Length: 62
Image (tube, rainbow, N blue to C red; front, side, top):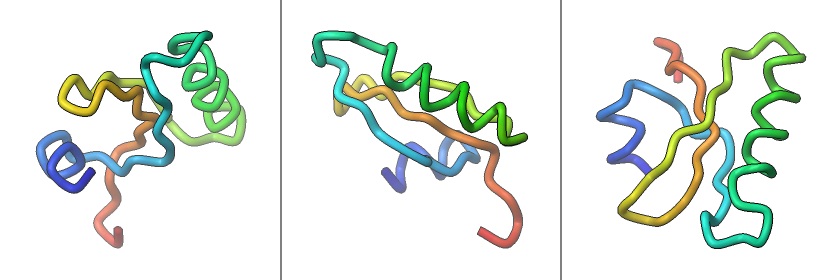
C-alpha cells in the first residue's frame, strides 16, 4: 500500500478484491459515498495486488 500511495501522491481509504463477484461495484459505491461526503475519492486498480483501491489526494498533514 505504501508504494502505491507514494507513487500516486494519494491516500488509500479502502481496498476491494478485484476477483469479487460484483467486480468494481463495491469500490465504486464506497467512493460515491465518500464523494457525497465531500471527499474527492476515486477508484484505481492496483494490478500488482489485483485490488481496486479507493483513493483521495494525499494532504500535507498525512
